[in-house]
Length: 476
Image 1 (tube, helix red, strand yellow):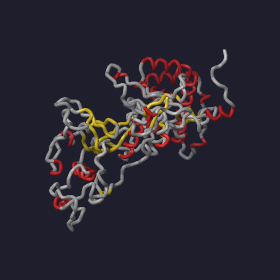
Image 2: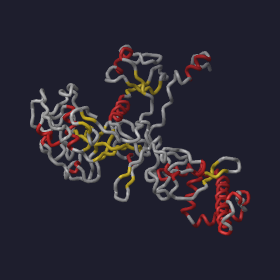
Image 3: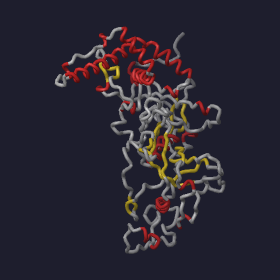
Image 4: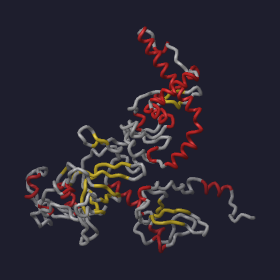
């Protein structure tokens, strides 16, 4: 039967397959969550991360449907959205149409996230005082994927595959990428398939691995005994034990000894298969409890190593804290239930701090600029009278990527003084002291601007007085 596809010239075929004229293949979708199988899930919910390339076009080309493809896209669909952003699932389908949809969700979320100037850290751990320790994902002790050559034992064929060190606090467990899977996150069926396809065929290789391990231990024992007898003997002068010198009886005895020490056996198996660290063996690893991320711990969203920079206010000068971010209360507490409210920050869902903060209504003090209100409107119960839903200003500290590729944002205790400064800057409240209403002609006193005692006694500016126009608060 003749082919239905039209023949193309070699040059056209080369251009079609080149990276200059072709779109990259989509990546795998986010892994499913077994715990959410029986729960309702919205079909229009935004995926955890994008899987297709986002395509944009100038406004002049958008008006005629020109997006750079072989056929124009329909104007009725592409001109409805505010931003010209689409993701193309298939350039040319069997029906000779271009399958596409809007890509504003992930692209605008990326812009919102970058406006917050967040840095990524490894999953937080706590020190002896219970305070979280934040370590950047770009630190040299964390940002590496391959073992150091000094940590490997060379095999007879010249490759490095056997681990030569034995210490449970091995820094190699701090890596974010491993060849093997995270066994704690696998189902029974996935584990059985992994054993059948990837493990059983490597029995002879594992026996060779044990030979090299035993040879390294015997070499270390020989060096120690010679050094005790004659300390002047150099270590390089002592002949090393090779794997070929290990007999079958010695290997069998070594295997029996390992079966009695399950912790050491699991440690060797994990090193041989390069498995992701488990909590039982590597409790110091940040990925032992929930598994390593499926991408780089920064996900390419931010390359900031730290947030140690100071923001400068046009009137109040350098600020102690970073500017607050306006967030949306997605799910309130609903009375006295134990369910924590969900906060939408920059297109991501974040939990409120678990310890006692201003969100718990116990430490929230009153300021005249916020009307002496001791509670956050819409935090405990749903308020239908609020236009656009309940909003709240929050302080964001850091972000990290979990094992499923989702972004986890950590919130700090809210600083009400910082909130009022940010509200005043975007024109959502009056002056800082709330006493002066005539903000059209500000008259500053001669007191130092850095002294907060005079803020209630002077005329402070608003967004219009700063020359910023009527900005309004941007809803993240």
